[in-house]
Image (tube, rainbow, N blue to C red; front, side, top):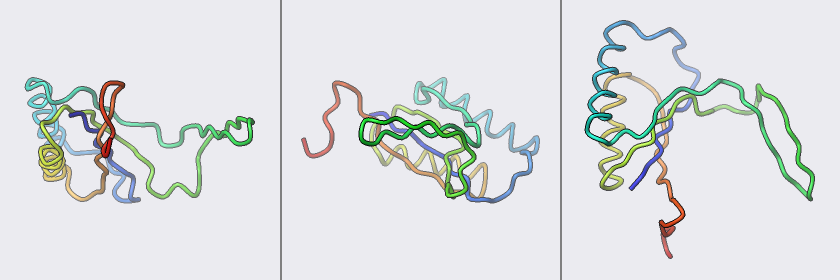
Length: 117
C-alpha cells in the first residue's frame, strides 16, 4: 500500500535545522530508502499556483494565498504494509523533528480499488 505523508505549515519555527537534526533525518531517510519503503520525498515551494475550473472556465491564480493556513510544505511517498506502519514511520519522523503537524493519505493507483468498492 502506498501512502503520502504530508507535513503542514503550522506557523511554527522557521529556523533552519541544526546539524544534529540534519544528521538524524539523513539516517532516517537513508534507512527508509535502503529498505524500499521510501519512494520519494521533498519539500514544496511555499506559495504555488492555484488552478480552478468552474462552469467550463479555468482560472489560474499565483500565490501566496492568505487563506491557506495549513499548506503542505513537505512530503514523503512511502510503500508500507498497512496504515499502522505508515503511522509508525510518521511518529519516528516527528520524534526527530519535534513539534509539527501532518496528514497521511493512502494513494490509489489505476489498479487499486477505492475503499468500499
